[in-house]
Length: 105
Image (cartoon, rainbow, N blue to C red):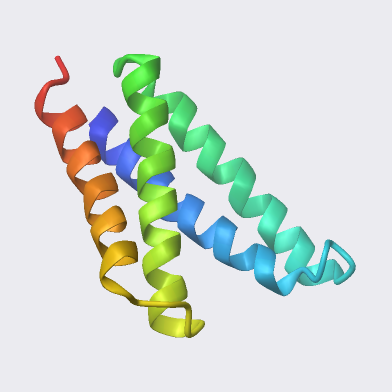
């Protein structure tokens, strides 16, 4: 169950990171409030997950999901570069997440 919480925390982390784009430097009230709410939910879910998952593994997976997911959203929806090097690096992050899960107790 902890891994499910960790995966959800990572997905919410993606939402939080993407929502930052719409806050315009925290000058817009509702996007800013939504962004902060997503950040709180993400950290809460992470804290639940790391009750049983080692902190190093949990934090690395959480940030990896957030980083890779946000980069993928950027490529898909915000016209960010999709060159081979960038996609390879996203793949390496995903491989690292899978490796941490595989080698975790």
